[in-house]
Amino acid sequence: TATTLTLAVYSLALNPDVQEKLYDEIQSVLKKLESEPENEGKSTLEMISHEVLSRFEYLNAVVNETLRLYAPAQATERTASQDIVLQTSDGSVRIDLKKGDVIHIPIYSMHRDPIHFPDPETFNPEHFLGEPKYHKYSYLPFGQGPRKH
Image (tube, rainbow, N blue to C red; front, side):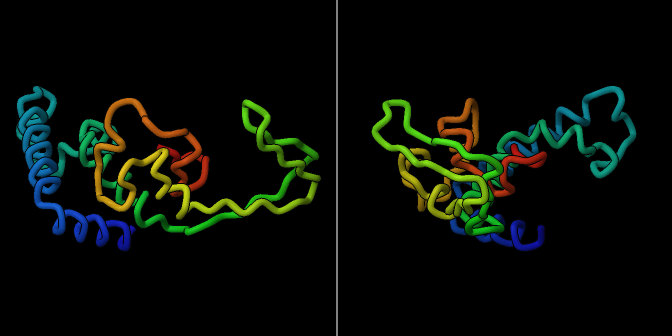
């Protein structure tokens, strides 16, 4: 967590336009929270809860973009639990896996694939706003488990 936050702050320092947009969103959401009756008399810290964090869409996009560029793991491996054939929809590429085969998944490379993330070396939280424009398995900072965004 500390590394991700440090890299997010570093990325924001290098991208003042993103930093300004994030600041504006935070101010806007906090203003809305202050105007809600259930938050009357509460401090800013008391208004922020786990549920409220989802209202900070751009903040979440900034964190996701940080994890895309600086994923905690550069790769992961999985072992095939059964024999299976993987192939493209048009059948032009086919891989036969046998039970016990180890598959290396290059997270670093997937996160920098221009097919899924245009201009992949640029810090651009817009990648994570609105409907995903990338394949659901091309962004795997934590694998495909419960922390998947």
